[in-house]
Image (cartoon, rainbow, N blue to C red; front, side, top):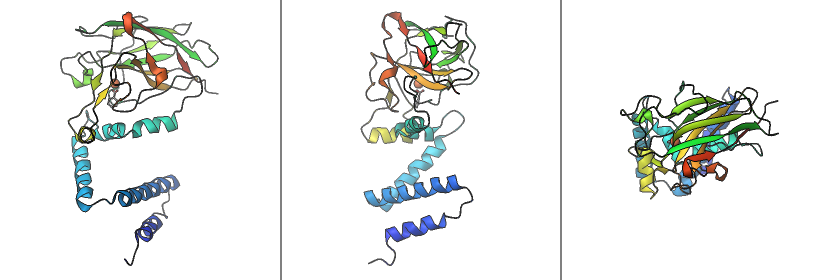
Length: 273
Ligand code: BEZ
Ligand code: FE
C-alpha cells in the first residue's frame, strides 16, 4: 500500500493551487490538473509514453513561427477549436451557424465592389463561381452596410500566404451589402485541400488512421454595426470529406449547392440590444 494514493496526491496538488489571486485562472488551472491526472490514471500512462508526449509537444513548439501555428492545428484536429466556438458563439435559433476561423485569415484584405472578383491570379483549372445572397436580421430585415470578409484557398489547395506563386491577397476581399442587404461575389469554385500534415498534428492524425483533408469551402466573417459577428464557411455540397473534415467544422446548414457556376446563401445575424 503506497503511503500516498493517487487521489491524495491529486488533492495535495489542487490544494497548492488554492491561493491564486485570480479566481478564473485558479478555476482553469485546477480543472486542467484534475483532467490531466484522471487522463494519466485512466490510460495507465507509462514513463515512455509520457516522454513521447513531452517530445511531441516540444516539436509542436519548435514548428511555430510567424507563419505556422502548430499548437492551433493540434487544437483544431483534436476538435478543441470547434468546441470553443460552440461554447462561446452558439448560434441563436435561426441565425447563421459559426464554424472554425482557421489560421489563414489576413487582416486588411482589399475592399471589393458588388460583383467584383476576388481572384487576383489566373484561376487555372478552377470553375468560375458567383456567390449571391443577402445579410438579414432574425426578423428578416435586410442589413445595409454589412461587411463580408471572404477568403479561400486557390484551386491548387493552397492559400496565398502558403504559396509564393500567388499574388498576395489572391482570393480575398471585403464586400459591403447594399440597401436591400444584398451581396455578390465572383470567385472560383473552392477545392478540398489538406491542412499542413508535416508536423506533430499531422503525425498524430496519420498515426490514428485519420486524414488531414478539409472539404471544399469559402470562409466568411460577416459583421454589421449593432449585430453579432459570425465567423463561418460555406461548404460545397459535392465535396469529398464533408463527413470527415480534419477539423470538425462542417455543419449541415452551411452546405450549399455550388454547381452550375452559382451559389446562393442568406446570412442571418443576431441584432445586439
Ligand atoms: C482553414 O479552413 O483554413 C483551416 C482551418 C483549420 C486548420 C487549418 C486550416
Ligand atoms: Fe480554409
